[in-house]
Length: 335
Length: 89
Image (cartoon, rainbow over all chains, first blue to last red; front, side):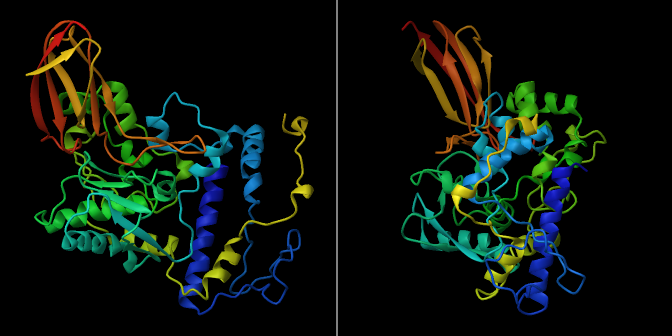
């Protein structure tokens, strides 16, 4: 496991630990709560044990994130973070340094939140209500809910563009407000209930920042490239390059936060046995399963508004100091 | 039958496509996903299969193309053939 992967997992373990504490054991209390907040504890933040013993991961002020990313990459190129599907689609494009810090930040954060939803094509109220109800299936365990607004929603749903798709997590905030962030081609009240479970919940999962499960390295490894090239050329007319981009390029391990690969996750497509090495299909999920629900609940804990600030503090919000105190990193130091 | 001129681009909402006949008159440029360049310069693209097939009229002649829609990961896509006549620009 590489360093960055390990750090990410540690951070997630930390989220889960803090969330679990908050959910199971009443208000989260840091052992340092007796100390004045705002006091920097770097270097002296030691715990001899106890229920909440931990090391908080502090973050830099926003203005320094890009610089820090550059420095990290200069020191060790392995620190470069890439994002599988986007990297594939944008192959050949050079992402700006700022993207490095953005691409790891599709996660909405641990605070409970409501995401407003609007429908660009209108549509009958019973259909809109039904779609939002299925999106909120995640809310059974996760602290994020979807609520319709008559204004411009953060989540903007269309039904008249091609395909089923959604932008990932906080990326939706970058999409121009007249464009959809989630598309449900041709969805009507006549659509079978199972499609609302399979498609609407899947796309809502993307909005929560969950990528495709079948792009996990372990599942991509089950696919026979030659069979895949033949299958997609025959059925879709895709070139080998297209198949490489769409099917055979796994998510970078650096960006994955999650459970072990799960063929039954709602975020996993069904893949036919005709493209796998063994001839066995990848089953694919047809609804949010227990693992999905538990993971969503751990990443987006359901906590009261009163507890959220202490969870934020426990996770280590960005530290702050005056810009005049910023340290310029000597380039010779990173050579 | 679709009548176009040399240099015209034909964009279909589709997951795939191919030129069945007349490859000298029409070419498949590619199959694409929508994308947005965000204000910080990052290229954002949604998770999901590609949604647009782009063809280009290369020179005068006739062609027949196939436009493919549906879940690319299942073997039962919906296809539609379209005849194209390309006239000089």
